[in-house]
Image (cartoon, rainbow, N blue to C red; front, top):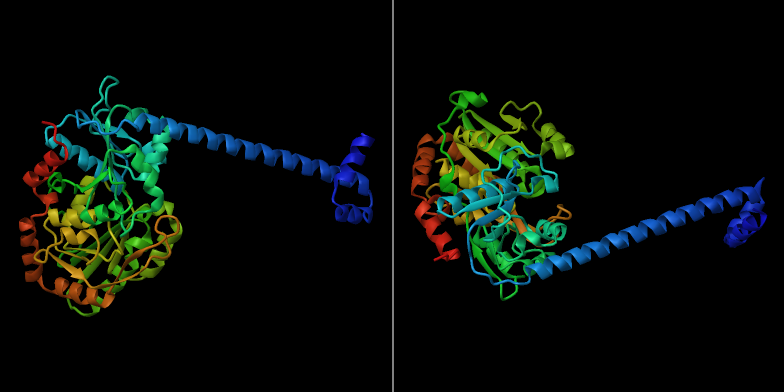
Length: 440
């Protein structure tokens, strides 16, 4: 013991030994301190070794996944398996569900793999299609972005992709896709996106061999419920303006604060009673953001926050029961709420930049002026680039007119039926799909 104590004591830095000499019971205290230091160092080394082993295992798993996926260029074949968050109440989940329904409507044998639980999403919805049988090969469309795709491929070592044509369905909201998406191209034969805006961003980092194609969602399959204002307690004679956003898609990008400002300005410019409904998803995950929103609307009876969970059918009913759909987003990769609103015959008012301008025609929609500004405030998701800063005054003027002019809203609603975007036209969507998947 004495020799070990001396060895430990001599191993201490000189300043520590000098300071310890001034303290009663210094050698014993030094021994205990040194023992604790050794334990801490051993624990740190063990943790470092564990991290290194985990990293090596992940690299090996990723390498195996890449080897399995290396045989690219296989032709399209059936069945087609859509991988995504089918069971989650989430924009990406709704996209995967719509895509699978559209492929089935095209007469293709369709399968589904739900990854909701893999990323911690609650499974709130049943999966409409079965998983592929062990004997089925076909092709895979992974409706998950590259970070999730790389994790899934690593976790499965690429087994679900082996011997199958693989299409990545990726969405991005800015002009330039992240450079760290590049490794995911090794796992795909081609990439689909919900908009030309997103396709342009992804093409900038795609290798020459990977074709990137816009393939908007088949909104034409969505139900068109009749309005039921009583279901949501909307007063008669009041114009209901709806904004809806998922805080997991970041409040900074969805920009509800600008919509609140525009609505308040519009309300002072018209005598027509109006109610702003803010439907919020993911509020439980961002309590501070929710509290800030609550504080900003406290005491204002013309603004209502809704945080309860709604099914896709109930969300469609809420949209159908509203009079105007408003979005002063900074950028969108598709703009699902706005597209759903047009399909449901609702006038829309939104920032005039990014993917939503591809389906918001002048007859059924109004676009808000904007300036492009540097991205800031969204940390790990949106780090660099540009997005739009909507002109709140312009939005307020246009919103006030829409609130106060029933005839204008009626004309815009009627014009939605003439919107010819591929999302709203079954024949056009099926032609697009046949061109993207030449199975004959």
